[in-house]
Amino acid sequence: MSILSIFYCREVTEDDSYKFSSSGSYFAPPEGPYDSYLEYIRSLPLTPHPEVFGLHENADITKNQRETQQLFDGILLTLPRQTSSGGKSSQEVIEDLASDILSKIPLPFDTEVVQKKYPVLYEESMNTVLLQELIRFNRLTGVVRSSLQNIQKAIKGLVVMSSELEDVFGSMMVGRVPNMWAAKSYPSLKPLGSYVADLVARLRFFKTWIDEGSPPVFWISGFYFTQSFLTGAMQNFARRYKIPIDHLGFEFEVTNEEQDMKHKPEDGVYVKGLFIEGARWDRQNKVVGESHPKILYDPVPIIWLKPGKTADFEEKATYSCPVYKTSARRGVLSTTGHSTNYVLSVNLPSNRPETHWVVRGVAMLCQLDD
Image 1 (cartoon, helix red, strand yellow):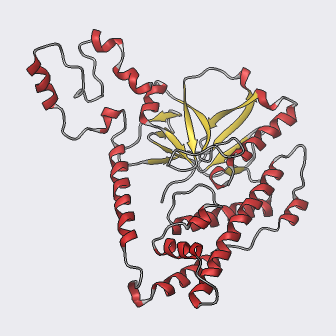
Image 2 (image 1 turned 120 degrees about the horizontal axis):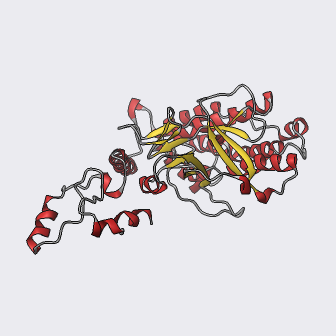
Image 3 (image 1 turned 60 degrees about the vertical axis):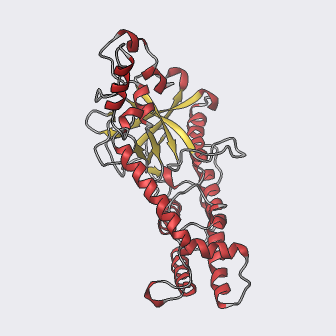
């Protein structure tokens, strides 16, 4: 609808100076003979500029990066798997890689100890959120650990190399996350090395939470099931002020702090770890602004999620910016009724009409692909 509103409007027929894009190259040609239309079409650039689609010029870089990535992915799949650089056989390479990953993955969380330290409380829903997250991460790290140990045994001939282990072997050879892990994992498009580093960072975040208590700023990207964290924040507010939870919603305030806060907010939660794509956060004017050339993603400062009665919210000029877990921007509805990729929409102040950012495809991501 936002794209159609550019082309299907009164100005097209009534205003001779109306242009479809900012450069002025694209417009509805004035009425004239048949040849004048052909001449106008020939004058258009051979390669369409991103502005035609309402996109920022950075969209060209994103497109080229994706095409290059697809090309390299295709090349990787055709590579021979017998030998590798350094004279090591592929079996030796995978054995070393498995040992390296196993050394980085910590032991499973002791959920019984955590349950005693953070019991289920009516006034603190985050304790339940923490425990549920630890159970999910224990399940994931259990699969990672057992598959790596089994692949080491299979290479030595101690166990049979099953089709699942064969897939793990092949995926590790080309630096891809094995399907066995992905089936138990949170959504991620990262290659194997970045995925392991990201997983270790998430486990470290929860370890710090267990040791030092609930953090003043939550790393929203670190959660396996982000919706449970948001519901927990809303539930705490609802129980504190005795308001039905279905009357509540979030208001959003982007703070000046980039990484940390000294204290927790009175109500709601501080979150960090989001990246904005297709635009940037204008830190001077406190609004959504145009991207700088060649900067595809802009880290968003800490956002304060403030629960409140939706009936009391003021109408402001904002862009309802969707937040996704990965750049794929698509997901499926899980059994909980939540999307596997979409998290929520954050209302960001804007001095441009909302349709401008919709056409730009502006969204926030919890994690990047690299």
